[in-house]
Figure 1 (spheres, rainbow, N blue to C red):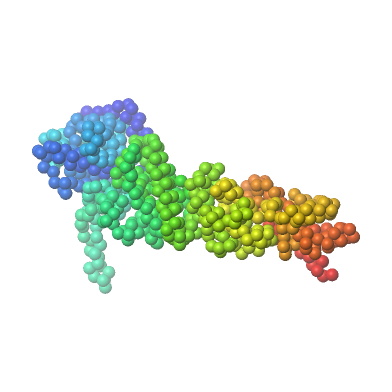
Figure 2: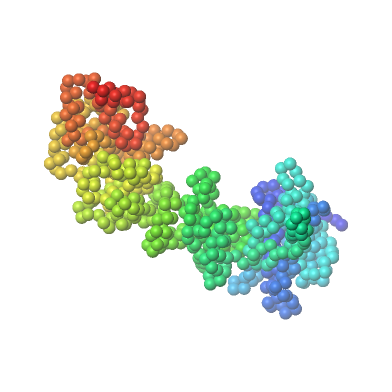
Length: 626
């Protein structure tokens, strides 16, 4: 029989598809099963109006079989089948979609969920096979026809033999190569996994004969293999079931199985949305962070389905980075897919779904914070850093969405509080939201700088996460109350009398202070201060970069050259002031030693490294040994 040639465009597309478009060979089975599902949908739909078609819906099914020796894989269905003309049209011209043409002829209310775009996905089978044979008997024809092709060279169509209406596709699986083991597509376990992964929610049963190993003699360890036809797919996804038919433990088990977690989720969020882009979603907030969550290996994203068919295992575009911890699935009939069904042809539908999902997650978290604080605190201790990251990421574009979800440790209440709670308890004379940064609550509480603020009975937010100050900086103000770091050079908490006394002390001893600054070199200024109570010295900063921010920048692999402008403040009421004055006037060498020791002390209090610890140790020993 004469072989027919594909159109030149189809040849190029077929070659491109086999070698480029489909990056994952496994999805060929998804495509063929989806096409079979389409054929079953068409038959079921037509039977509603065509009384000649005697269709028993409970008998509609897809069958898979394989022959390892002959290297044959067969996918068959008892759907509507194809006539000779339809085989020619749908398979002879790549990208001619029988399913789309059928769908366009249906009214909006009658549209069934046609999954595939028959003609395009079908050719993905050439990624794994040398030859494809399609035998089909249409409900509109008395004769069956056989379509056969070995790829870009063309195809043949002739009469075939088939007793029952439907389509049978036989793939001649390729021989194994050094790079690819095609034999896995003839393996029972692999086929079951592929169906479960990509086609678990096809509405019709996908059946295959499977092997069971039965123990017949425990003492002799003898087993007997038995064969049994099983349904491989669950057909109805949990997110499409009525809520009354799903128990909490069903959601928990689905989550733990689907996302390989050993703990049930902290929160389940289910929704069904109708509109320009309709979809159903089932989302989960984990009770703990995945082991690789804070690594570059972690991939965010929700499993994206189209009518129950897995399109993308992790669609990153459906989640903002600050909600990257969320797991779940999204199923929509309204997405435009490209010819490979791996990527989206246009992203407007996904953008709309992503916007709705982001709002839904945020609302659920706000409700949790309001109605179940302990649960929210448990969540926040696990994923709060990610929310804070979201506040300052993208130059603070999302701060207004997240600022009411972030929490910080309150010195006054000894627990986490929100910014709204802080502001609601501010004193009448308090103009700023005060915060202090450090490695731990204990270390922050011991900072000299907190004394002045605590003496005013103002609450202080203790920031212990590396991201905290960047988060605060991005928010800038909360309810018109600006944030102030207690380590800022000027908190303006002194009385006029105290300010005048400090100004006079700094003016009277300006030469001494300039000399100390000259000795140290890397401080912006040395000054006397009245903000310190019991401590002799501390470091404060000038400008936008704090000491804790500098630590973060210093920890980065590339030296960004960003440094805090530090000021060494000396308690003017501490005896060390008089000691420095005496040494400055009478013993310059000792003055130099004391200056270096005091600065090193201030750096240790601030959690900064000392550049010359050996020298400082010797200086301290020299001073105390006298």
